[in-house]
Image (cartoon, rainbow, N blue to C red; front, side, top):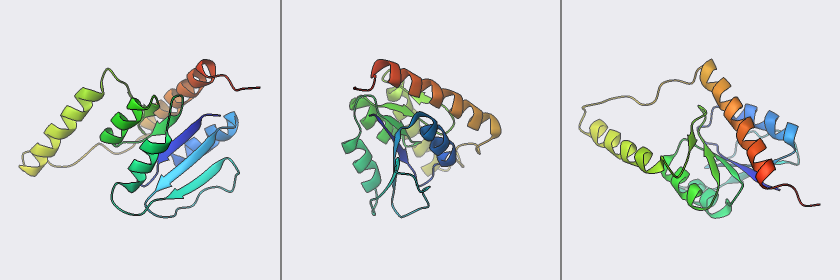
Length: 153
């Protein structure tokens, strides 16, 4: 069975992921730096890894082909893609091998611009359209995984 990994510390779509995971009976690993509320369901596991970068390291080490990773962290997305995982951010953007290099470069450029005080702020707030786009793409990816990696009988 394939697993959904949530980089959970700042993930705004956890409740949506739980609902969809239940519908498809998929395991969810909720990975964070500290404990958070996770619905009482045997499909869901809370993994706590305190310390900077340790939650990301745990996800990257434990994910594999056919798993889904939900994260806004572009370096983590790159590491998960290398392991064969599918990666989606909370606004419904899928990271792929074709665009991860550009995303990493843009992240680096924006970080330099922010440090130089040439640009301020971060991503736009999460809206209803973003949530809808996420749910649509998430469902699409789950069905792609189920087709490409059918359950063993």
